[in-house]
Length: 201
Image (cartoon, rainbow, N blue to C red; front, side):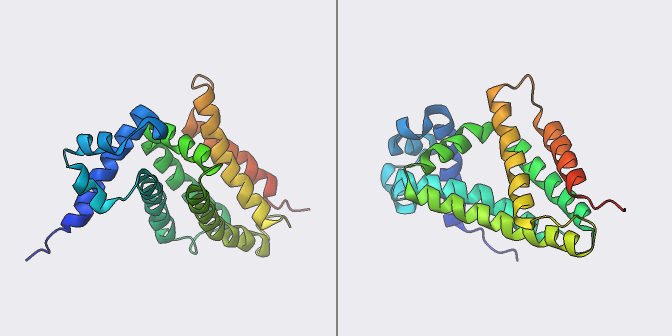
């Protein structure tokens, strides 16, 4: 007999999906809890049983976006590959996630704007970037130790990789006619990796 689905988790997912739609259409500032309740078809009282405020919803959406990526990253078989191959596996996975979330880009950049004035969003984003670095730095350091990469600073390379992905996406927001996210993330990563490869003397 299969286990019964968790109704509470299903309801939370329903609310978060509705909140994403409302925030995408109206922005964080203009959206109201009433709008989200209406989108879900739930009463406002039921909505507040799951999320006490709009800030709680924002953090929950942010957490859901990142947790899925982290689960997939942590399940990658990185040890069986060279450092370069492991980085390409991560790049491919993150690029796929980014392409699947393009409709949420307005929300993503509102998160960044909120980070300047909302300490909870700022704390959440800081936690996530550090988790990414915790995954990337040991892989890069492994490449350095094995002689695959030059004697570079592993943390600086990891930060550059993150900046490359985020920056490419931001340029796409500026002008979609000159940036194609998948192509330019991969071409940028190729240039970066070529720059840190060890070359035999």
